[in-house]
Image (cartoon, rainbow, N blue to C red; front, side):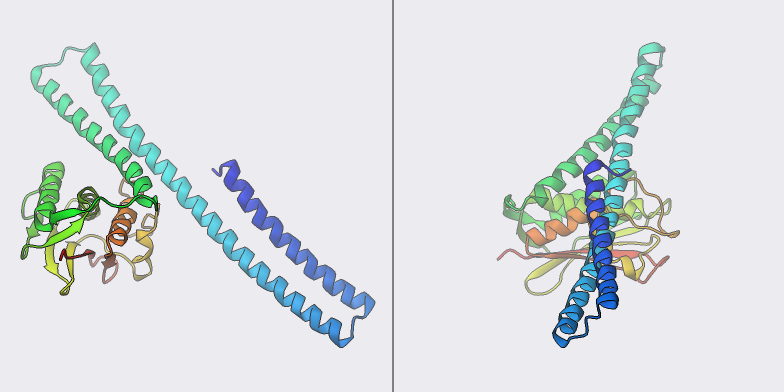
Length: 297
């Protein structure tokens, strides 16, 4: 589905391409019938043809980019719709069951637990979307404070263990030496949580994720999240940090999400003067995601 605004944008590029091609055809027809053979006209004609060809190439490039952007936005809308609709439908179902049927205390507690989990999932999706807007707003600066990075990462690890019911062996943590950073606590917490959540989700049933903190150099500290999941092709190591991008191909499992998690990670890193990147030896070889931030002085 393409919304009217995006349809007009694509239509503009198509019309421009058709117009440029028509001008080239008319130019050559005129050249043939009127015998433009004078040197000055030949030079100007060749220059015009070169400009027209360059215009067609640029127009094609922007048209392809616009189409890909539309596809990614449509995929994002579908993913968000699913992520919002699924927990709401689940909560409604359990509420209707509690309202219309006699349920014993044990099942009632299970229903409440499931509804709370669905509520958390719903709130997390909404927060991801709102956070993307806040981080993407160039006029808003991060609220900086001195943060014990080790304590913050440990908090994120414990949250993931509880959320996904994982043991310390499935999700291990190596704190390293104490490190203090000057950063926005909410943004860094969101970035680290997204890295851990992604690693767990893409690991499938056999979760083996390790999180560690270590000094990258004298000025930077790195948070590394390693998994033994499906791995990432070399051609997609940079693309996965783009907004709305979802990994593709037979090796990539279908994992629920909005395609905003890694975009948030990279945006947080840039806003704090750091970097974020991914490492993988290829499909089936696992992945390592690195969030590098400046050490507070």
